[in-house]
Image (cartoon, rainbow, N blue to C red):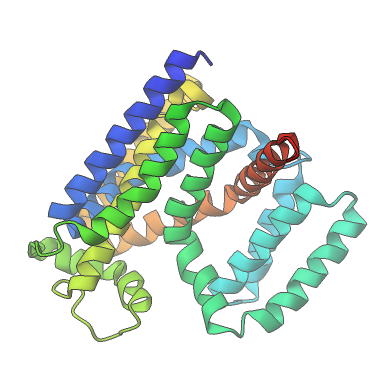
Amino acid sequence: MHTDKVNVINYYNILAMLLSASVAVFIPFELVLLSYIILGPGHYLTEISWLNQRQFFTVKKYDILMLIALIAITLLLKLPFANLLFYVFGLSFILLVVKGRVYQLLAFAIVVIAGYFFLTNNLLRTIFGLYIPTLIHVYLFTGAFLLFGALKNKHFSGYLTFLVFLACPLLLGVLFTGYHPLPTHWATIEYREFAQLNTTTLRSRYLNIYTDKASIILTRVIAFAYTYHYINWFSKTSVIKWHRISVPRAIIIGLIWIASVGLYFYNYRLGFKWLFLLSLAHVILEFPLNHRSFIGIGREVGVRLRSRPEI
């Protein structure tokens, strides 16, 4: 892609970050909900469509069927949610780096055994059961994509974008901390579906998440992470061409998006369950791409380290 075009996209993303962070200061709880309800399903549906066009970034065409089979088995066995994410995350990595089905199955057997022991740890279970499908996905994995793009393109604007991305949560934690607008009645009712992020992170099940200072700051960070995660996706049309789909597919995606938003406002509990399933599907199906991004970052950093002149 032309350098000027890359720079324009990067500076647009910086502006999007600053706007997301600014709005998060004033309406943190409302912003989480509005982004999740309106931008969320559009992102999930279009990304799943894009991943499908690219074989879900797996090595072999039918590798995705192994992931789907694993999901079905864990659901049939009624295994804990953290186990499902742990096993699918591990198998996604194995399918990328291990060659040969026999060796892949042996490696996955080790993952299953490791999960049996490791997931008894509350921290690891919380990471996979709560944070990977939420904050880790919308912040850490998004940051990995930004860093990988900066390392590949080697533009100053790319590195600046990544630095601003890192700085926004820090600024949200130190600026305007005395400003605590009360959320609307609508937000206090419907944010309860996200409340576990606040109570678990702050290690207090009984705090008032809407008035506690630390909880409000945390919600600002959550609002920023979710909002920018979605905006970042929609800003990449000229980079990854996810919008190049057939008219019938675009119409189907549009109709499902309208139905998803409408369902939420018609019955928010039922709508939230549907949006959660869509969100979870796109999180799981993105695992191979996440692994590729981290592998790519390691490769790019390795190249730079090897190319450094000896002192």
